[in-house]
Length: 397
Ligand SMILES: C[S@@+](CC[C@H](N)C(=O)[O-])C[C@H]1O[C@@H](n2cnc3c(N)ncnc32)[C@H](O)[C@@H]1O
Image 1 (cartoon, protein in one colour):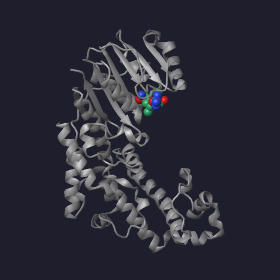
Image 2 (tube, rainbow, N blue to C red):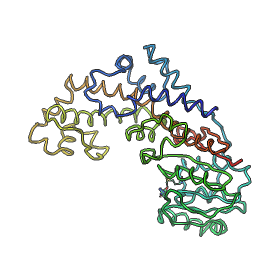
Image 3 (tube, rainbow, N blue to C red):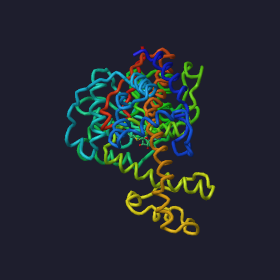
Image 4 (cartoon, rainbow, N blue to C red):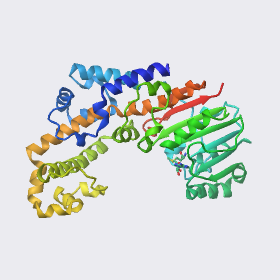
């Protein structure tokens, strides 16, 4: 893949559709008029099953409107990454104990990704309990330094190794440290820097560290993009020429992207949005209140009555509306129309999420390339199991 070419095409596409990225659907209310109206109308004709399918598959065949079809065709091309199917080496059952299936899947693939590299020492950044390092050190003489700010997570890993794998524990140094920009760590030229889902800025610190030291390999999987600082995006010279604006709404969407959801999850999320959006629209229309977070509700709140949900999270509404008035508002034609518009617009918006993630990762890749490193980008983990699955690997040459 030509990273530079893809980055430029991707940026152009994202900038053209910036409107979709900048704000979540609810913040666009009232949505009577917007640049994607004809696409929303195309979605409105679909059944709930088809809408669900469209969100999961980005399939152009599902929509009638020609410009929307073309958008989806281009989006699919831009989103496509080389995929490598790695043999998943079986994990030692004792060492694999208490490691969740998702983590096991990730570690098995990373072991295969790294197994032919002459790496003697890993620096595992944001290592948590050290599961990845433990398995990378199985049946060999390699060493690892596991750095994490959570002593609690590290203790879990240490306890597990102490009983069953003291030899591995002897070869891991657990360092309890908050990693910041320009952090120091002892290493040699046959060391590799690893970051498996190093959240937010941590992945950027990793990339910068690799550039400004003599590590031979870097392997990074990003996550939690909503935690990125303003100066941790648009890093490469290529990006700086025409930086993409990345709002918190856009970054939040990227963090959650790409995992196909089941019809049951889709239906539940719709129910959540019905309540959440309706409450906000009521507050805005009837009480001229701007949107504020109502706090995270319990799943059971969405199974009950809308009026109970409103009273629980906005008790002051009791002064203004009876339970019957709230229930009538929820099912009113006007509210149902506004809801449908927001939900359908939300589907169009959701198409952009993976591209935002890809923009962030390609920018990091370009920064590495600009410093003369060999870079490889792939989609590795199965997206159903672990959707933050873009592997960024760099090698010093
Ligand atoms: C998403 S978890 C990933 C853990 C592990 N790599 C894995 O895949 O199981 C991110 C980890 O990074 C750690 N972390 C986040 N920011 C950090 C920082 N600035 N310095 C050190 N550790 C940090 C957290 O404590 C957490 O254990």
